[in-house]
Amino acid sequence: MAIAAAGGASATRHVRAMWRKATARALALRLVHIDPASGLTLPSAPPRGTKVYANGAPRFVDNALTHEQETGLREFLASDDRAKSEGIADPLLLALETGARISELISIRWDDVSDETLTLAGQMVRIQGEGLQWRAGLKTGPEVRVVPLTQGARTLLDRRRACRPEESEAAGSWLVFTSPRGKRPDPDNMASAVRRTLDRAGLPWATVHTLRRTVENRLISSGTDPRLIERVMGHTSDTAHRAYWDRGLEPEGALAGLEYAS
Image (cartoon, rainbow, N blue to C red):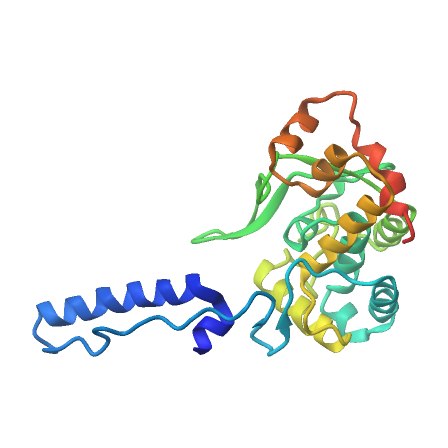
């Protein structure tokens, strides 16, 4: 039941499949003589909207922050010393400005930043034998995504640029965001820092997807062209692909929507 509550019906099916393989092997080797799970039925999945995260918080479907919650989170990130020391405060603030994924934001190079736009072009990945490496390509959608910069995003990036190490070859100096030690950021460590930060901010049910949904709702409420919304958010529907090839739809067209009530 715990597996069903945490991961849903698909998780229980995966666990049953792994169990069957393990017990089949044990039976073949005559380590056991009876499958202890023979005839076991899967528990019913919990009703929609009643799943929980590992921290025990309810797992809502397509959740987003209210305006008051977003304002409170921005104020918390601007003042929380731990979030700053862990290097996650600014990436989360930039996520609220752009709707980008944290994995995309922590992989931004200074060469990807212009006065008006931010180009998302790759991700930091751990490669066996090579450590953390920057690799071109995004999680989903087109390989490169351009997002217009709001005033808040420009201010944040200007502040970080002013503190950029002078040594051009310094470890991580070519990246906008680094680890607390100034090295290449580890996506797993950043993901853990996100969870700790949102918990401390009083949002244990929120995730990075919550922030993306918040930005998407802002764009929808402002009346932004749906094709532009999908292009900026990096969705992969047919509509998004049409927008990608429509030269008349420049990403800057979504700027008013990103600034809307933010």
